[in-house]
Amino acid sequence: MSNAIGNSWNLVKSSAKVLSQDKELALFPVISSIAMAILTVVFFLPFVFAGAIDSISQNGLNWVHYVILFTFYIFQYFIIVYCNTALVGAALIRLRGGDPSVKDGFNTANKRFGKIFLYALISATVGVILSLIRDQGKNIGKVISSIIGFVWNIATFLVVPVLAAEDIGPIDAIKRSVEYMKRTWGEQLVGSYGIGIVFNLIGFLVFLACVAGAFLAYYFSLAVWVYIGLGAFLILAIMVIALISSTLNGIYTAALYQFASTGEAGIFYDPAVLQGAFKIKSN
Image 1 (tube, rainbow, N blue to C red):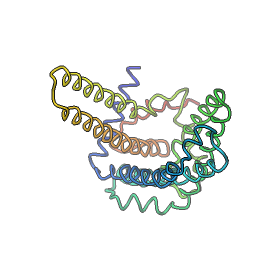
Image 2 (image 1 turned 90 degrees about the horizontal axis):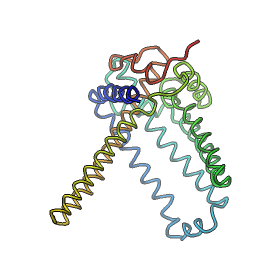
Image 3 (image 1 turned 60 degrees about the horizontal axis):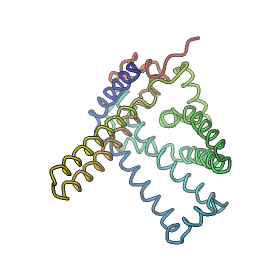
Image 4 (image 1 turned 180 degrees about the vertical axis):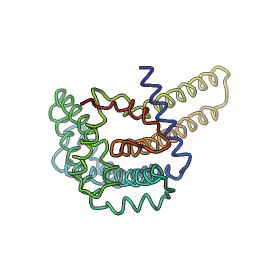
């Protein structure tokens, strides 16, 4: 466990070195989050005003709801994959010795616009199928959908960098992702979610600090604005942590793709760290 945590921290530091060279990479998750917020409001605000939420809670989802959910998934996945492709594309330029800009990242995504949409369509289809299995199958459905979802996430882990770097379609990108994962994935994953683990721990520590501050404010009978300030700080801190974590994860995905496809990940990453994150498969 200690080795996994140490390796995860090394991944964070290596990815942070890339981000320190190109701080504008953090703009891609910001743009993605804003676009997702707008999309959510556009899709679900009419549901609230129409009273559909109460109907769904009482009667469950019908075919109309699934059609709307499928459409939402398509746009959701498109936004996420489009912005991640831009982020990874820019990160790959840096890892290969270049000096990327935000424009370079979006140029990469724009070149793959149609392929990103087709991949979003595939991902939306999988997402709706998993929702159907989860909702219709009750407890066993939840277990099955969780297993299938995990396998799907592993199989498609490197699809975004493949789309960014290689001029192939989404089906071939999924196949290529599986191929690269087979090269670098042994008996178990050690660090694929390492960056998330580190930042979840940081977020938890920030939460504990704010809770301790609230107890102290209560003990010393401080003014209500202290509680408001602590709450605002906690929300802002969580947003910043999520932003940095998402950016570093995109950078790490780019580095892992570079390592899986060429055997090297550039000057920012120690090959031993990446080999520890995804154990090399023995022949």
